Length: 292
Image (cartoon, rainbow, N blue to C red; front, side):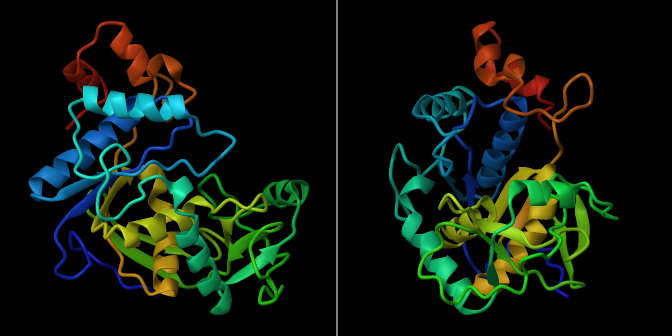
């Protein structure tokens, strides 16, 4: 069992470093505004450093105009950072698209240690598995059925061409104490299964990229939405396998629309950019987002 940690950071003795990590795949919405405002506030409260990391890994969906808009919208909200793609810093580059060598190094290490395996399942295979009963599954990603789990990845010189999954320790309980929500507990293999770390189109997956970057940039606390609580359990397993110290975690309450649905980038009417154009002030937008 991974032991619980309940301090602001388990990166021993390190000064506070937080991060803003938007993806330029659409306009920032109210939920982003609330989370990023909280991220900035916690960095100020801890007399710490805040970085901006552009998570532009997806070449099909990331756009330069969205990247420019997110920086402009964050500035308009009054959020400032100390390091980032627009100003540089000691731990750059701050664009994930320029950090491939870091992800490859981690992939090789995980492969050599036997934590990864190549998965050749098609989308049709995964859709069929996702439609089968899975007790306890509560997030977007269905538990992988383990079809390719026994495949050996040691003969691969690079990750391209197949999906690569992290082999979770089935039955192991992952516990952590979130700094906002409190104690959380997930069981590997039932609450979540073997997850992607590298896509067949040769793009590193979210779970691997953020773990590698948070460690390389010496992040001591991750502030993000509560929809990513289960991702924290996955990332704690990755951190342990790579020998990284874990940061502290603070998961913010989600902002929902009038129907109770979590906001997503498809909610253009609730994007910060659209609200700005109606004449709203930053204070009004943050109040609408339910800023604490």
